[in-house]
Picture 1 (cartoon, rainbow, N blue to C red):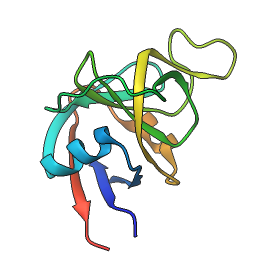
Picture 2 (cartoon, helix red, strand yellow):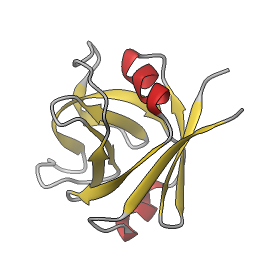
Picture 3 (tube, rainbow, N blue to C red):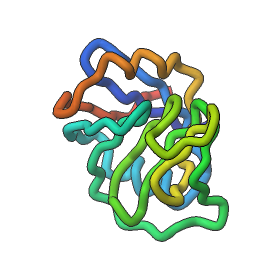
Picture 4 (cartoon, rainbow, N blue to C red):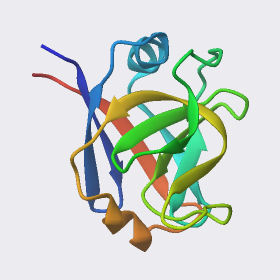
Length: 126
């Protein structure tokens, strides 16, 4: 059975199924933690005290529902639409990131989040 975590911001809950990657393992090992979010177009990101390198499958254009870690910024990022550098309708991040989780939650509620909102990320016991 795969591991899951919950990302909570305001009254928004995002359930994430972790992939079997080194990044996912390192994030899992430090849960729970909280941080403050920043926004960039239709992306939120927040500090995460994990040190990992870019993985072979890292990418800068992600699919809706992919939850990523940005190694050079030490941040978790959730893209859910256009960013300032997107072309057409793609979700383009500022840099290559490691995909560490997948969510089927409605990420469009993140539109209601603001810079400085508190995020809590914690394990879900399944």
